[in-house]
Image 1: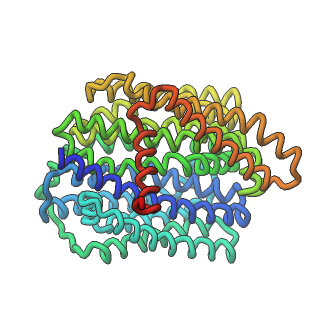
Image 2 (image 1 turned 120 degrees about the horizontal axis):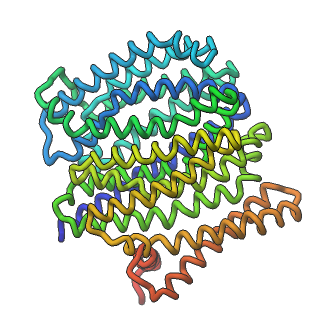
Image 3 (image 1 turned 135 degrees about the horizontal axis):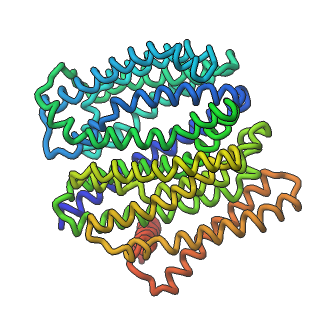
Length: 498
């Protein structure tokens, strides 16, 4: 199908742009985290995490996923853009007022008066979110992810400079809060610069958009509670510092897995939406996406876990040493959970967002008792164990349900996952229990020990993937497509044979 080939090419190009954006933004984020971790304390991070948890809770009431509804439509007109903008602006305006009014209650609940002014400031940021140009959805619909890259990069640079400058002079949590506010303000301004469109108040298509988006809203609520519950529970039962440690551990863990997978899924959803009437092609594209993600994401998550004992003190400083045990677990939890993230986009492309809600609800029901029991018995580390158990369980459930929807056998999914899983586990055991301890003991420089261990891990993983692929008869798989791509690239670089 020529149309399918064209869509695949656009998705691949879009994925490269989004990945480039994520790598750049995450790189800046990591640099920012390393600098801020040395100037700010775990308590500063914990206080900010608590405030952002309350902020994120209210934002959920506007998280209808209007962009997804617009991307999934065959064509758009002014009424679509204006209706979506109007609903979103109303939601954010109401929520900004409600959040501002709740400032005293938030401070009282967490017994910290500093949260009052923080809440007022975040209320302004919430209102600004509703002003963002809805027409930038065209970038995703038309696979113009290069424009998204530029817009996101410029905004991040301004936010980065603001946050770092304030942290240097203030040495306070206000650097994080004001930095977030400046990032949001810049994003709004740039959205109108890169996509010149002036939305108007309109309700013509409001009902149609809401019918699609209501299930996404409910799914977002569930996802929020699952992600933020550890922060709220730890902050209430243990300490603000424990929230800071867990938040930092989760941020480091997700930086190399979940966010990259999310970047790959966004352009993939645009392709899924255009192939929703061609089930066979859709199945093929979904398997290709899972194969690529497994091949790259699993070793990254297991790799970070394997070297965390040396990486974290070098990266963040010794005061973050208590987060090492958390990151060892959360890094693996994050990469496993990321494997099934694309299933939600499949359901949306087929007009079945209700499935995402029920799957998310199942995950929350499983997570709640595990979290309470884990923290009660093991303290902070118990929250991490609860996370990894739920990630494994929900990944299996998600793949099973997606297989039923796409008429896809689970053996097909297992066939593309077993090599990356086996190679990642083998690499993890070798690096964590043999290579890293040996070189840390034999070499004075921990930096050099870390570098050699990473290179050994990468070599082991790549070699195992290649050997398993050859032993299995060189099946048509992600490895084969990457191998063919590498051969073509080398042929182009070497020029025609003489």
